[in-house]
Image 1 (tube, rainbow, N blue to C red):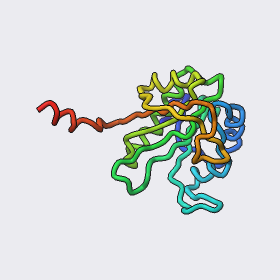
Image 2: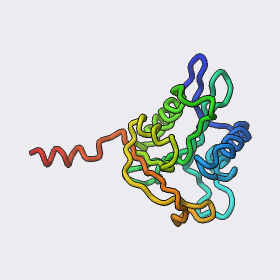
Image 3: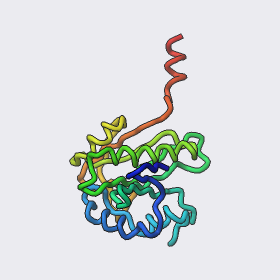
Image 4: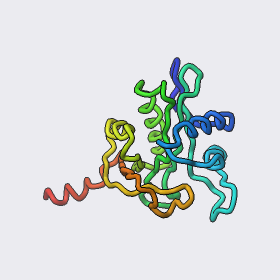
Length: 185
């Protein structure tokens, strides 16, 4: 994780949950709704409720500046036995007064670095088309690969919202390197 004189980025603890819930409620229009038990599962590694598996592959990261929490990121790291794992940034959020100070970059870099340790080198995220956050993803080098309709917290399998969500992709590896080499010969 990252730790310097004034900034810390690392795993969240249960003590961070009240802050994360408060910030996620303030920013719900931008980042959507995720229940408290999902954040808890990302910390403990154990899902609760009626699930097909009780194992949670998500991790919850926080960023502190001068010992004050200023943001969080909820991420998953791909299917455990997949040949190529694709991680997903479910939520990344910084409080309003902490934006545009390279904190988002630090938080995202920490998540991606952790992903390398668990063999996740490619990433996806969704960002509503009407948010200035699209500029963040583009500035971080992520590519818009598609768009879809939004989904509701009542049914996460169907695209029921009229809100357009841009899908971004990022990879630490060149997935098409061998194809380009083959075509060049």
